[in-house]
Image (tube, rainbow over all chains, first blue to last red; front, side, top):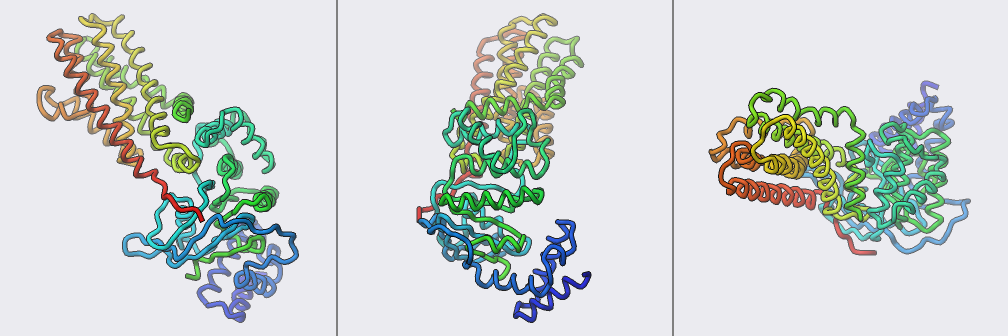
Length: 270
Length: 224
């Protein structure tokens, strides 16, 4: 079982993946398995089969056979030739992506390739150096970390973000609590954000991103700290949003998530 | 609406930081206690302590909100409601602190013009909130911000009050009004103090708003 990463990398190479990329995919996959405290073979199955599965997913991400799908709606986000440079360093360039209502897109790539930066560009928090962005005005952002006030409770967060969206306090709180129950979370009245576990704080982050019913949800690795059950709940929630006609863009490094999405944008390949 | 919610929740946040709050409340008291034997010096030190405490607390509140602010903007809040709400809360905390210490000084000291002493402490608190915000806007890390505040207060404390350096410092107004409150003199001193405090408030609040307008700006994209 200890040869699993090597067998996986060898199979990727045999399937035509570039050596550097094959090494990176092998490292990431091993890391993911370590995060679930399991051996890669137990988590992903035989190395050669998972390698074939992954290559198929990366090369034909739009296909999602066997699943009942709804008609894709209007375009919610459109990126054309988008690039970002900091001084003389190009983070990424020539990014094209179109996401319609009822679709899920994943942004993948190595650490530091600009996934979060691209998400901030989509949100409008960072200006692109090149290219065109068109986007629906109602957007919700769930950052990778931070984004909450440590000394406030969940209900106070709902009040704060609700008021920013024009909701009265009572409605914002009841909406927030309702959305939280979908993630199998019942916010404790007196518990402050800084006293929450990492996973619970991410649930709060998710609810805050969704509180004002945005048409486009931008999620930056939103499942940090989730246990297995919550992780499944999270993806069910993503599908519920999708089926309700929303567009979702999710930054992820978990490669087995890709089978669930309509588009994959790999910044690592650029 | 959003301004009031931000103000109320910011005040609640500060109220929960018991240790920080206790230190903030105590800080001007130590300044006062050291020179309690001299009315003028004790009042001036106390007032400077109030300014330092409130500006430092505001700095921490501004820094603690750094991750929340962009999300609030995306959700629909305006910059002025976010910054205004926070300023309102911290000014309220400062006014409460100033009034408490004013009662102490009126009871404990012989002050020639007690109303001017109250004005001096209120000015210190009111100027401190936007000053702390401005330092927080310019210096995003707490340590750097706290050191900058320490430098300003030290210069304010040591500079000759009649000299240009002292007048360029944010709390010069309290010294001017304080001199009138303790030693008496022409009422023009009070007006000079009020004018200096007003100008400082406008400068600090305006600069804070301008910086956060730039930092929290959202790119306006056309719809698909």
